[in-house]
Amino acid sequence: MADYYPNFPLITELKDQQQAALDCPGPIALSGGPGTGKSFVSLWRHISNYTRDNPKKSQLLTFTTSLTYYLKQNCASQSEKAAENVDSFFSWYTSRAASARNIRDEIIVDEAQDIPLDYYREPEMLRRLSPDISYGADDKQILQHNAYNKDTKEYNLAICSPAKKLNEIFENSEFELDRNYRNTKSIMKFAKAFFEDAYIPDNELNSCKEEGDKPRLFITGGDWGKKISTILDIVQQYHGDATHNIGILVPLAKPPRTGEEELVAYFYYNWIVGHKKRDGSKIDCSMYDYTMEGLESMKNVHVTPFKSAKGLEFDTVIIPCMDVLKKACML
Image 1 (cartoon, rainbow, N blue to C red):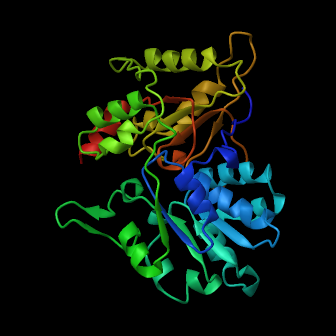
Image 2 (cartoon, rainbow, N blue to C red):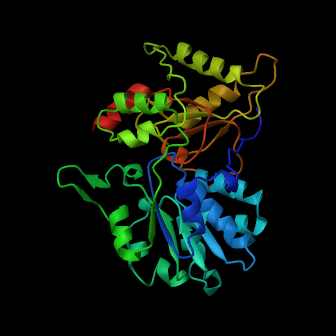
């Protein structure tokens, strides 16, 4: 298999609301569900800051290491200087923010809801590094499971930043992106039916640009051999397509107890790299989880926990532990 193939839209492909956010002269606040293009607007805004006639020095930050890698790779195809200023939020803030050399004309935070609110609220923290803080945020995509109390209907601001609170702090120009460009309608219908507690508005569902194929569910009855052979068969189907990305998404980074190793990424990674393609060559595969220090490369067969896959694009997604995921979402 080849390296991960970036599916990066041209600036001319941005839609009206996305383009309006990109062109806004002041700091912006992006909202919208998954697949509406918040990350792409933030990325193009960052690139445009460096390629304009009077360049602005901006910093693009996001929460996960995997998405940082993806955004940096895409950015490099347009501007090396802009790519140098893409980083994960905490990596950049903790290691460099104390230096006056890191003052920026604009800081753009993608997935801003996953950062504790004090980083935005306290003047001596992020706001001392730039006069303009732009961001994209979606409360439904907060990663920490204990960020929201269903009983009190309150957010734990020590670990997250809901969009309403961010808007109160910054009063940026707001742009709501409401058309789903990533997911097909069939996938969204499946998610809405399978995860009953997940709120998916009808406008997000109806905005999907394609109906698409229905997700396929394989029942293995706990048979590990059948499960791994099914995964390998799917990978084999696309081994010759360098533009087809396959994501194998698992629930956890660490097994909670002995005997539950199949819930983590390295378990599937080891199986896949230990097998060969039909032509006898090795299956090239990458793995990342959030216990690792960094991500040096990503192949177009990539094994990772759900948290670390946030924001990435895959043509085929394999979820080996769907039953476990269903139970976790009901807790």
